[in-house]
Image: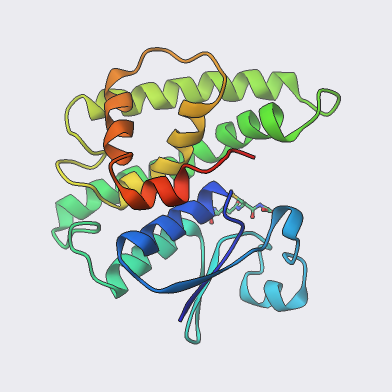
Length: 206
Ligand SMILES: N[C@@H](CCC(=O)N[C@@H](CS)C(=O)NCC(=O)O)C(=O)O
């Protein structure tokens, strides 16, 4: 059975669990990272030399990097609408996946770590403010895209929404000042109609 390593409250792990649920792939989730530790165990490092989650084991096949895992699961367990075969449609999905990984990772980490995971003494206020501003810009850009199409990569739900969803959930639920982003909010309401989004992504933010 597919084994998914990673704590359930990690945004990158959530993507993989959500994708597995959408594709109805039976899986076993193994807690690792955060307070669960394990990431420096030699057995884990042998699977993922980065010492990060998520990692998957599918039989003897091992893979890390959450967005690569999404692509693999959709290709291997076949769902043409999540990851379209048409080159141009697929490229749009890839574009948004790369954008979430490349643009969000650092500002989002700076915002979350400083806002909820650090004490007042540990907090880096400059990084927190910069993260807040950048996230605002990025979510505003997503709102603009979502004013054109109901889902990030076009007319249908895809891996792009899965890669973006866990970040958007946290940002939309955090007690911070946000500009009014009606299209992003409407997209969020659409995600809430998906049982797997509610089950995997909408859990307490810790
Ligand atoms: N680019 C990697 C990033 C992985 C990553 O940063 N994972 C974080 C959790 S979101 C992690 O392992 N942090 C250490 C920990 O959880 O202890 C991916 O998308 O898989």
